[in-house]
Length: 475
Image (cartoon, rainbow, N blue to C red; front, side):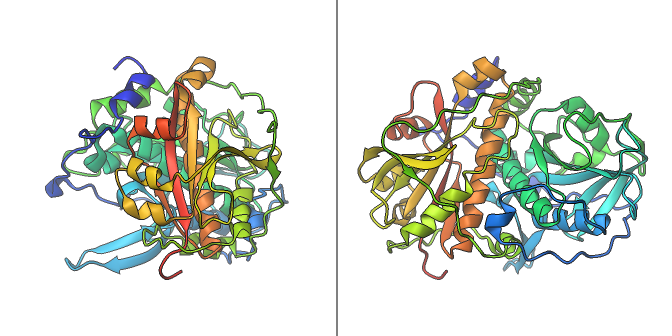
């Protein structure tokens, strides 16, 4: 495979050809990463502020609060913790997480690098969702700059085989989307606790992976969130001493955890720096409907914990203002590298309270324009691997990108930008729908070329993610 474009084409679904693999149960990946001998940070529990979702989504600066170690742990729990546990007929306990994942395989792992924070030793920590604690992997200062006050940086990685076990080479797309979900949770959690995170999709892969001590052919850092006293210019120090042996060996999640070579080639192809923020898109032209400020007073923390993927949509009228509020939450880009790489579209049905058709959501200023009137949800359901239940939703949010144009402007790293942003926006949609007591489900599997035709995408553009929103049998 010579390019990321070839990877995207190679992993496209088409009728009669669904990429993936037979998931052998004896090689099923472990859902949790365990550092059994890592020293556990003694951190108290922090009370999560009752911040409305619409306010948390603004991600505005705030003063650094007290009790920082407790707040860092609380942010990890909201971003990647366990929201519910079910005992299966087999007796195995299945844990749902705060961030959704394709096939509930949860490839993402969460770490935090801490320096000069009173109450917790300097070092690099891994967050364990199962035990809700921070395990110290490295002891010492992770940042080369010191004396500037408390510093913290979250790192989101992916254990590739967890997703590839079922989805084969296409799993890299899902790993990126899943990491984007977790990034959005982190942004909300840090805002709630006054830490105010800033996402970073463009960094030195080798330095980040070395700091985490992962095996790069099994696990890789995909995103960072700078949350306290540092930003993208803050350099790493040389990795401090590990607190346990064989850090890379902990990236193994199965007896045979090797990811498909096509996936690893795609990850390596996107490892180059880009550092090329795109200029802001001009505002909408022609007729458009400005969006009001969203009103979503539900608790952000409670909404994160309550979110579930639902498929029991029913063709029932929704309030147009509820959908408008959800869309309004997407109009606040957090300014990552290449902000605006993902185009937000809408397919609205007869039950949406909006004009049925295909629309574009503009972020600056927040507005919606109608591209083509009509009823598209039935065709969209067929595009999504003939999942007929999707037709009963009120709205399909479509997240697309000009992959060819981005590659020319930013290089192959932009492939990560686009999918991470699609995952982040998808998660914000999931939370907005949950707060409005509606069902929501993200879809990453579809017939790629049929999707491009349905959405009338220009050559080189592609659908990355679709999120369905609507009424369900039991809210």
